[in-house]
Length: 196
Image (tube, rainbow, N blue to C red):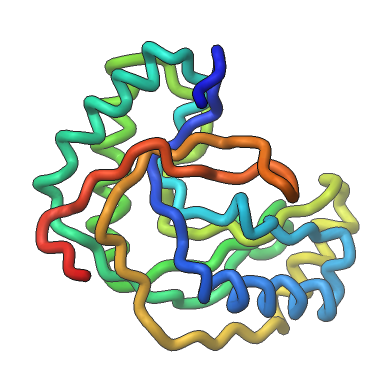
């Protein structure tokens, strides 16, 4: 059920088997010295291409109509490449899993989608999608925590083989779940060439 204001995004829910992969990576980072690092809870883990901010119900309807136009876009095949820091590796504020495979095409698609959404309603001032899945962030942004996280990232190991298939794009809405905030699919559209 939609509220008067709804935190929304265009993106995709991740398969549950990846949650364990990310949990292992989060534990590895904390173990290597990122004590001030908080892992993103499973309910908030998603491939967010375009954060839409707080939308009113009528704006959610417009976003849904824009979503319909994506059905002609070919599905994406991605790999989980490595751990990286954002905004940089030396003094990061957050940890992402870098994506490989159709990475450049996905970045370009996200930019087009962001531009089209920005023509319909104001978007929050957030960085453009850079093909990284955020899995952890610092609890507080102090120099020691950022430095420790950078050091932890340099020695943390991340090994995962497999492909992340993005066969559909969703309008995601943040809701209050049993264990805290979580992304829920409001509406999805199958991408062209999707299988399964």
